Image 1 (cartoon, rainbow, N blue to C red):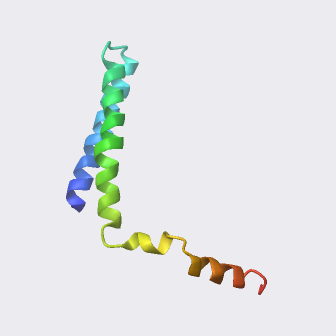
Image 2 (cartoon, rainbow, N blue to C red):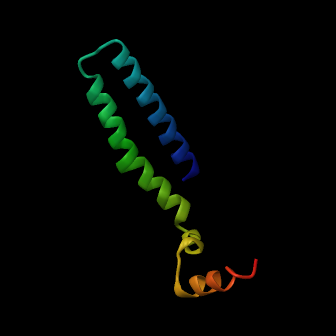
Length: 79
């Protein structure tokens, strides 16, 4: 999965570089290439990255629940 993410990221960087080149040369399809690159980033690359990053339950330390709130409020006045 790590290699897949690296390959996908390289594809995205190359895609955006081609898009910037096309914009600089004022190609008629430049905006379409850039738009498809952004769609690739938001609908293919980022969900894959997020799934890979948090598939093992690593996200649980970032969830705020009642116990964590009580503990945080207890420690506010102790400093």
